[in-house]
Amino acid sequence: MKYIVTSAQMKKTEENADRKGITPSTLMENAGAACYKQLVKLLGDVNGLAFVVLCGRGNNGGDGIVLAQKLKENGGLVLCVFVTDLPNSATAREKYSKYCVIGGSEGSALDNTLYTHREDTVKKAITNCDAVIDCVFGTGFEGELEPRLSSLFRFVNTSFEGLKVSVDVPSGINASTGEYAERAFRPDVTFMLGGAKKGLYSHPAFEACGDLVLLDIGIPDDCFSEYEAAFIDEDVLRHIPVRKKSSHKGDYGRLLNIAGSEQYIGAALLSTKAALKCGAGIVTLASVRSVCRSIAPAVPEATYLPLYADADGFADGESTETVKSKLGAFNTIALGCGLGITANTQNLTEFVLKNCSQPVILDADGINLLSLNINILKENDRIKVITPHPMEFSRLTGVSVTEIQADRIRHAREFSAARNAVTVLKGINTVIAAPDGRAFVNITGNPGLAKGGSGDVLTGMIASFTAQGVRPLEASMLGVYLHGLTADELAKSTALSGIMPGDIAEILPVVMKSLQ
Image 1 (cartoon, rainbow, N blue to C red):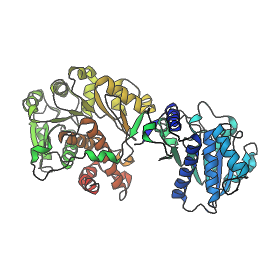
Image 2: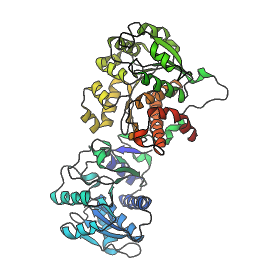
Image 3: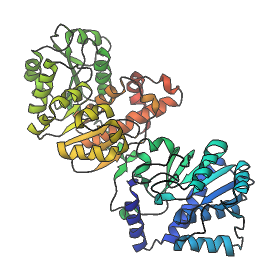
């Protein structure tokens, strides 16, 4: 399992590792070796390439010293720049003595060292190197950068055209909160060590970190006794329902999808088709009659529950009674995709939320209608799945989008605990939070998903897995992971701007087949 931690939680994790006999010195050696291997993946053979390693006084600087020695041992031309002073942590001093003074196991000392007060020499070295590696602060930064470092980082950010790498945390970014200095180091890639740092997944800091790569430095899972969230990884695929040889459509769930209106026909189509593509046995679309007539030729595999429309093409006042008469025939309800916001659709939504004994997956206008009476969730203790994007979540919570994005994990977790709901807070690195406090972050997907209709497809997927018997939390994780993975597969052959939500639904079975 891979975990997201604050600085304090990472310190506790390392202390737990030390008690198991994995010393800080061992972790530092492991960190340097892991960073070296990742650099080789990025650059190929490092022999003959020139590197400037910016080292701070703490353990992050020690990581840089070990990495520099690995590069030198393999033919790299390495200059260590101690940006303020020599290392002052015990473990970093040990590495300094071993590699910069005495030399490594082969007696080869890192004698090419500089200090930032030799500004012209340092800048000349940076200009002529192939990669600059930032090992200045790691998890130890907060506040503002001192002028000398601010000037150095500005030079690297604006004038250096080679590869820029930060080890663990880009210098100038707070590892726990994501607050960052104006002239923080801006890497092309960040090598996170042991655990992913929470602040790097906050916004807008996320945009300043380059590609995030989590490296294993030898810390066992059971050392992570405290953490903010876990990443969703391929282990979630074990929840994909298995089709038995002897089975029928009723074995794979009955889903009622209450969606669509004359203005939003596509939302009903996309969510219904995605639900069928993910394997639900029976998918019934409850929508206004004109939508049912329009969609039926495109999705003949679905069944339909026609509703009367009002003058504007939204479900009318009789719709609640129509749905009420059929509700018991289904084991999962999806509600809200393209439904519209009217007094009638509000009554329909509140009826379902109050009275439904089945899992309900709520999206789009269903969420906007819920925000008009959030306390309705207290009238039914059945767990709901809420799938808002940040603006919809802001309407639900009264918290600004900026505040939400600055700490997505905390806000999703707090809402889930308070409202007994699974929260799927969509966006880059979608957060899934459970009522019991657990939180998960997804790292599949790409900006091609930033298009109207993507959320409708995701709702259909989550609802489909839930209908097939997957618990709501795991169904949400599975849906989000596969949704992003399918977009990543499309991105191999399609420009991100050209990825269509309908394409996601169309090739889902192909992607799922490749995972078997």
